[in-house]
Image (cartoon, rainbow, N blue to C red; front, side, top):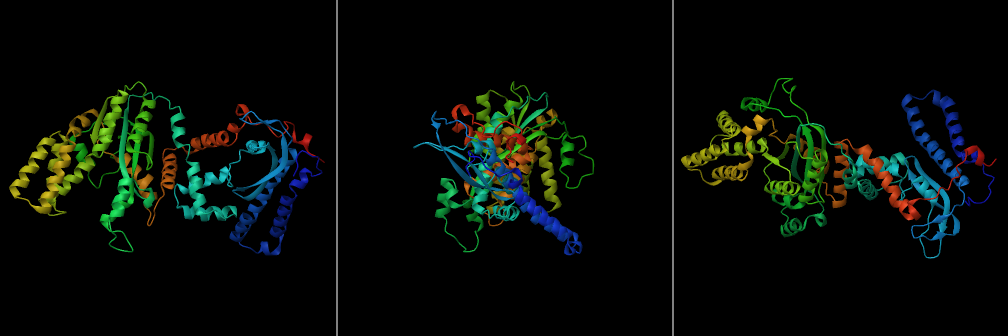
Length: 516
């Protein structure tokens, strides 16, 4: 349609197909068959036929815009004015189906063509609308790409393939880093603890997207079975995602007896009533970035909350040497003092494994053995625990697998001995367990990324991790507003002189430009 020429098409004509559909639906709802239908049958009819009505309404609006469009002066970012005008059109798949957008194309010899109407509508460069992309972002965070494909194909009436869903998810998540870097985090007016916590979680990946060392190990490991991976082979099929969390929590002073009571499997209701809860919690994960980058980002997030670095910064880890080293390195660069604490629950797991070298599994004797050493640890007597383990192992003359259990525990305790000052932590009200990051690992990674048979591409995995992180941190809506603005800048504003696309619609009341 040449919008520059006079047309006899009226506003009524633009919406005539929609009115016809509405009349058709009305006739059916007034019919004898509809009066005899169940409510479920009527609901399905209104939903299915109503989608086509909405699609025609949307199409009618685009027809109306084409009527209203007037020629404008179009100067690109290259400072070249496009002087050749021609009618043009493009399809867009919306949430109610496919519509066609007619607009004027502004071109010149050997230069990029521009479409001011696309800028006015903020149309994406791809076939699918931003609202379809948003639905993909919301659904792909929780459901498989196949499920999202089926759901949106049914909703729009247009087939949307699994690969298109993965691509849309990646585009939807592309502004994740910019969002958090640009966000003005208000300095928290509190003296509460600022907690940073880290962990890693493996994601099953396609071989080409494994890290080089893991891919090489996978290629060198022969398959024992055709239909499944054995235990030793599985670790060569995963790429580690670095998980991080930053939150604020009030100090909570406890005694050794309080902690022992907290570890009971069955507890009375209301026992946690006075325990401070984490606030302003942000969690995220990346399988694409190295651990050093994610940990640095976490420290930057913490610095935005406490720019003067006057609060108590606590770093909770599970004992991973690399994470501890990177946290200390980053803290030195920022000039901030941190208190590193190794998660008590991880320490207990090692103690339980060592206990079964001396006592039968599941026995009361094993439980009492662990409880005694737990009390020593909570009193800050970790050296006493190590000495006792060595003495007991020598006295029992342990060998083989039993000795391996004890030496593994000893090696772990020695490696983290500088971060086991639980007595000081309890007296200062510092957290000693990594429940927040464990929950983040489970929600961000395990619940979504480890579904049976899943093998992820690096692009798809990173996109889903980002989208789940936005939801978990309560930032999705704010992020989406920034993403849409960034899309307008990338696809439209950056292509025009001074970053300002001309408006193709006259700024007049609609009744003044309608042709009757």
